[in-house]
Length: 314
Ligand code: SIN
Image 1 (cartoon, helix red, strand yellow):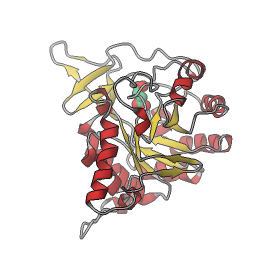
Image 2: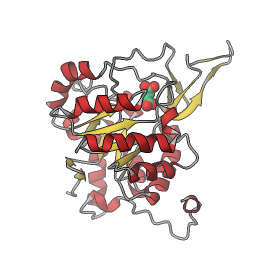
Image 3: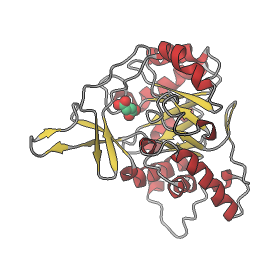
């Protein structure tokens, strides 16, 4: 069987398939449905300093091949997470990546400081890319200087892996990846959701309470792969790819295009064991193709005589 493990700084993940933030809760809702210990990591729902109720309904709508959400970073807050969720999450025998969201740079720092004191957190994913909030979110994620500043402030606060989750809602995502790499980020997650909108034609009103939301699911997969390809050509740090992965072939596409690991998100709402099936499927593919380490797949794209337009942006 191929080697599946993946290292980021001082953290060894058993495989390269993670559950994406916001699609696996805090792990506890899943245990009767799937075995999280078979995933490389669980990324928690975004945690803020204080609990957040999130946006009013309607905040989720299905679209063709996708889901539009405007959750608004609803979460129980970092203190309740530590008391009520982390003990159980720690017992799941998989790595735990705490996703952090905040409205100010100081809040990012405070939440990370509180979490970094704890056993059982293996790394941090910094959400600078939620399209559904007025403070934080995209106001940081579309500003290169702002995300560089957040990374610069957070980097010395932890020895654990620091992953910055980038938005695709910019012209050239690679520039943002370079900005956080220069400030010491260990990896980037590419990508968060694309801004989208749905209209009820009978009422002529937007369906979501916030009018626009973030689109995820298979509809965005080709865009996400292109963003991963662009980013992986621009930085030396690992790119963690996500966006519409539902099966093994999808995950392989991301790895071959340059992702060092993948996150499985929206499909968890349909099949919470999808990530496990994908991890098994990657192993099978490696066996069938005589590949001894999943790492050999990463960036193994044979572009042939293809002319890379992306390269002209880098
Ligand atoms: C949300 O809570 O609105 C979604 C989270 C995100 O897109 O980062």
